[in-house]
Amino acid sequence: MIRSAILVAAAMLASASLAQAQETNISLSVERVSKDHGPIKAIVKVTNDGDWTPRMVMVACAFLDAAGKAVDVGKDSSSRLTPGKTVYQQIKVRQIPR
Image (cartoon, one colour):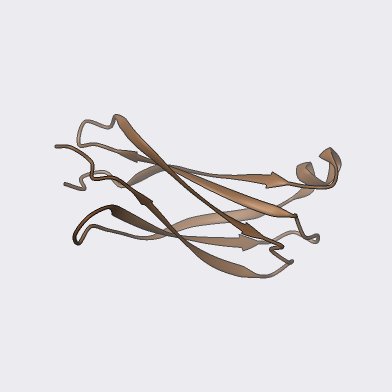
């Protein structure tokens, strides 16, 4: 049962330098959470609003049960997210218990 969807969506960057990583502006939004058959899936929109291209952007989402307890974390990555580019990542986790 999906009562609470994704509470945490965090972007982690692989960059050439710490200074570049601190200047990055990556925006995330959860576009959809679904459960048909099998795993629960989230579609996360990831946009590079900055002015440089990180080598990799890793998105991690914590999925919560009805009580608000994190039960699983799903991850996905994109490489070479150029400035102004938007990608959609599908992140899956096992079924969340009731």
